[in-house]
Length: 377
Image 1 (cartoon, one colour):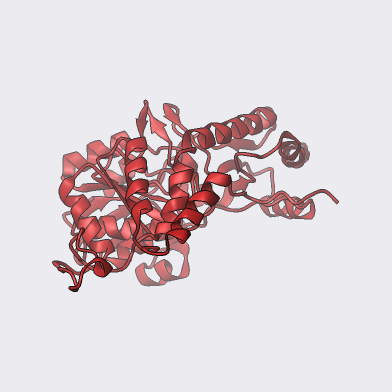
Image 2 (spheres, rainbow, N blue to C red):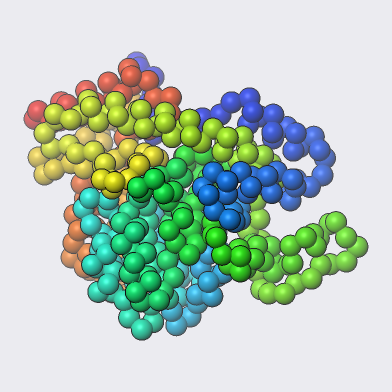
């Protein structure tokens, strides 16, 4: 019986272990220690942004960004229906209303024309997603946000290292958020970050992640209770998680290059297979392949393909079902099938294949042999 091929594996080395041990052996400040600031500095330097504010998940990063912009009840935020459900949920969590706009077929990101049609007097922000690790049409969405004087917040959970015309994702919006969940480009187990060049917004983010307490007046470092100037929550990243982040971010360029090499070998292997199309993303972008996705045409039964992968101990996954057709959004807002036809059509045909930087050629061959067999049916 061949070894299982999981959907992903975490890349780690001795520097990850050494950093975490160092944080633990310090014997203090496990919740807020020097690795947090160091990780923020290294992340900001890699992306070329003035401020990186690390938090405890990609979801709380998005909440923090919206809260920092003052978005709340009475506001609308335009989001895609084809994304992880957190993209819409965070809008609900701050008391605003998510307004869906359809996606386009090349990047699977928000369709700029659909976004324009969705803007109303209540629109406060556009929240696009860089799908699977490819930039969406973020330059066009930036122009729309400027035209209508609304905020642009990038959901770049999967896109650390992705670029458009040489410019990093997370540098187009007023704010951006990324994720360090276990399957992302770099990982702290769970974790996330808010990115911005705006000093005021960065300060608001730092306040919100730590109960509204003024930074520099840390709770256990003084006899007093600290100064609280706004309402906030506890979204802080632990020092041990940040220690992992410091080691991981030092390897991000290498990790991206290795992912792109795996993706290139996949794409060459399936280039001539009928009915199976890799997600290449933006034609002028640099895809980092946090997810290696393919789109299947009508000739290939997706559930049968998934079952065959499972029989051969190969993982696969559907990313994602349309958010607007999930129970909560369907019942709350009355969405029905056909509301966003492109997103629904794409969601019915996509499939994610195993992807990680150390995926061997032998395992790639095992995956693509199954795809080849289905292509020829």
